[in-house]
Amino acid sequence: MLKKNMHIRWLPIIFLFGAVSFYLLIGLRGWGEPDLEQTNRASREQVVEVEDFTTDERGTADDYSKAIQQAIDFCVTYKKEKVMFRANKKYVVQSGFTVKEGVKLEFGQNSILVVKGNERVITVEKDAVIINGTVQIVDPDFQSEVIFLKGTDRFDATNRTRIENMAIINKSESYKGTGLSLYAKGPWHNISFVHFENISIVGFQTGIQLKAENPKDETYSWINANRFENVSLDDCVFGIRLVGSISIPNECSGNYFTGLQVQLTEHTEQFIKADGSYNKFEGMVWDVQRIRHSAPLVVLTAETENNQLDLNIADEWINDRGQKNSY
Image 1 (tube, rainbow, N blue to C red):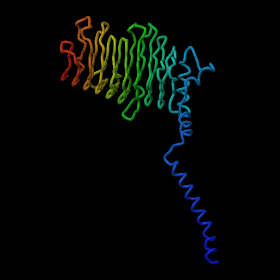
Image 2 (image 1 turned 135 degrees about the vertical axis):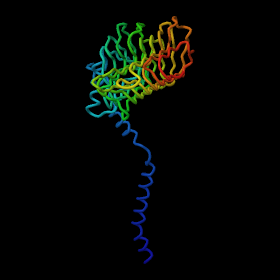
Image 3 (image 1 turned 90 degrees about the vertical axis):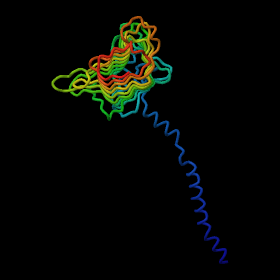
Image 4 (image 1 turned 90 degrees about the horizontal axis):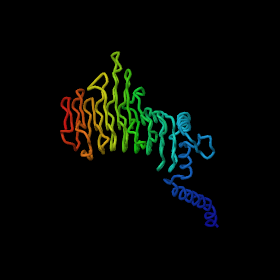
């Protein structure tokens, strides 16, 4: 009788132990495995689509400029992560827009921004990001900048501004406009430590321009220490232009162009014209034999010092009027 009572008394404990073990076993199987539905929902909540801001229920428009800017502004107001362009779609814009601080503008696979008119296309603020885009200029009257950064935003070493995986193409065959432009003029205006990577620029008057002007009144402006990695320049009249001085008050120094691929054509007049110091240009230059003139392809002005060229072009194509430049 005693043994039977002991067995009965232990039954609840055994049952509770089994239930706890089963619960732990099921729970452990789920540990480390994310709830995909919840993860996808959270991810979607951080993405804003341009189509959400068009008046057409199908998300189409003759000019997406306003919708793109509204989507960006919505991201800023409601702390969303990014604005997304749909894949395999063309977005026509007839005026420019600004990618504001903290916003990522992401193009889908084979989504294209088609530019009509003659306005600056994309202004990029500090801590903004653009990735995976194709921009096509189709208007022969276009002579503005496609991507523009302004020194008033004061891009310092803390900034996380990035422009990556972009194709910027002038399809109008006008050879006008500038693909990528950085500009500083004003007291302490500067653009520094910005990262550009995997960018192709085709068919412009100027591929890339960095310009720092003297702000006067005993103040400085500068465009220094920016990185341009794996950049391709094809069929541009002028490839890279650095406009400034060796040092203050309008310095343009310490900018690195590495992994360059430069395709020269009959339209090319000059590949590099540089002011500033400690800038580096490294890469490959193709088809010098296509050049129709004998003027220098690379000009290091009297406002240069300690610049470095690592390019496969003969010295006869280089005009060095500066000091301590190496090539």
